[in-house]
Length: 78
Image 1 (tube, rainbow, N blue to C red):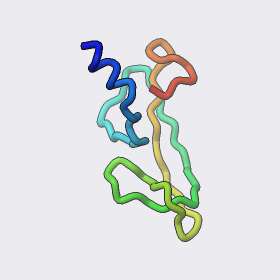
Image 2 (cartoon, helix red, strand yellow):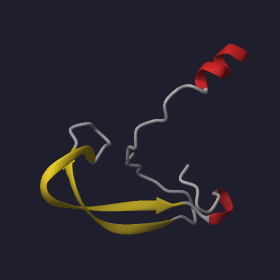
Image 3 (cartoon, rainbow, N blue to C red):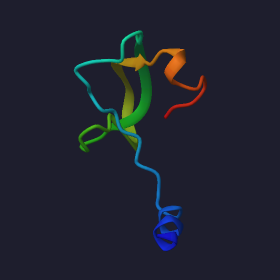
Image 4 (tube, one colour):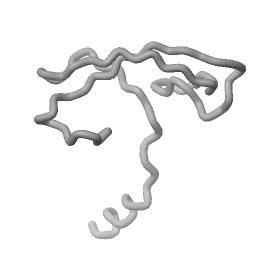
């Protein structure tokens, strides 16, 4: 068990992905954002943009659900 914990500490973090959900936590609020970037779109499901440069400015509308303060630590992403 100690070995598995030690090895998991060396694992990389999950790649930044967006996971669509049908429902949100009661009390959550949605933030509608317009994102502008010069990054290229990604072919990977759940990843909107890649780390590669795009051909120009790309815009995307995304909605992010923010859980209520009672169930999250302000400033924390996870």
